[in-house]
Length: 130
Image (cartoon, rainbow, N blue to C red; front, top):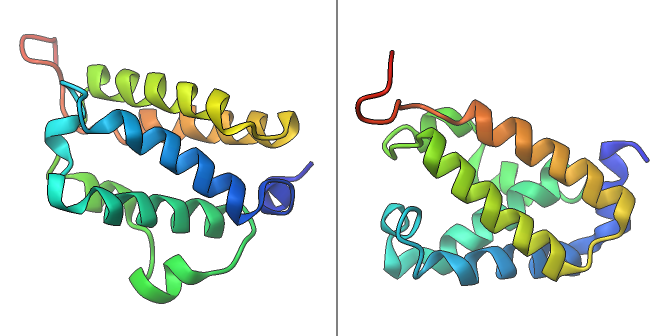
């Protein structure tokens, strides 16, 4: 399976299950929760869902509404440390398990999330060597 075929295997419903399972964990999370405006969790969920659908071969709604993803720029205001990255991956791993994604597609998504979440680190931990 090519990564552009992931949408065909998962469909909009699969990405909706995945992002829903992820965002249900955010509200009460002590590391990630404060990064998300409580009044816009639904908006954040929709943006992630639309981005993933676009990124993995589905309709281009994300690009039409928001333009180029510019993920590092959009996330720069948030302190994405190694700990935040690791927690994000922990919650996404749980979401992947809950969402019942086909194994081949899950493998592509997991690989993408691992690399992208590391790429998004933009701050060091307090006291960490620079």
